Image (cartoon, rainbow, N blue to C red):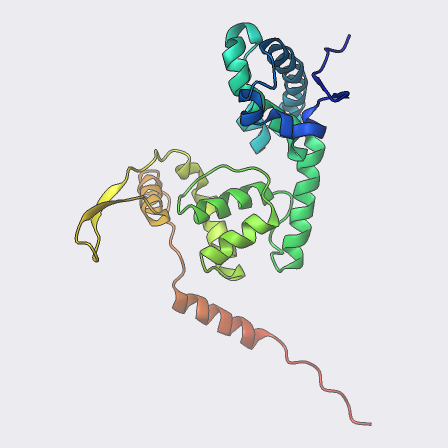
Amino acid sequence: MPKPRKVVDGIALDPRENLEYYTKSAVASGEWTDAEIRREYSRLRDIAQKRLQTLARNEPNSYAYKKNAGAYPILKETGTEGAKALLPQLARFIAAKTGTVKGIQEQRAKSIQQLQEHGYDFIDKSNIRQFGEFMEAYRADKALQVVGSPTVVDLFGAAKERHMNIEEIKEQFAMWLQALPELQQVPPIPDRKKRNKETGKMEPVKASADDYQKAVNKLRKQSGKSPLRKQSAQTRMKAEQRKQSERKPPARRKKK
């Protein structure tokens, strides 16, 4: 027997249709009674658990699975106050198109198609998730950060912020993939102090991708691997010139 839902103006609420009723402010405003919150939390948790089991089998590396797996204890453990705090997040998971296997796969296919149309022909379904992680890492100036199925807007925005063209992105993405085994072993690098030239004060500076690259190369050296190095702008220019010279000139039309 299905669990009863909260009814407002004759409408039985569900986050897939009425997410505005599940926001933090709505839940905290007194629009929901404690009994309604407990009942709705349990109902949505049942849906979420079934969805998470499917994601675990088919998309275990997805953002939706990693963010929500184990996040929703049973009502007996969380209590009414815990259910109030978790209900908005639980509702967003139920409402999200990328919270299902089908939604994740559709978003991924759309992103791949759009990326390839814009010249990112090295991206396919085998590396789109890792490419999303890579671009988010560079946007945040970090070496490793897990995100969900990336949208094309996210990826293009990250490239623009980092002033990276497609060739640079392709090269650095390949290097990032090589570094993944070591990156996953590198603990977060703490902020360091650096003098601000304008104020003269020592200010905290977050670790950059270069700092993480040094840590990665240290681990690679310990295991007998060669260090990872970015190509210099001069090397890239020479490679591009060589590529241009190897291209065949267009065939001339014969005069009639």
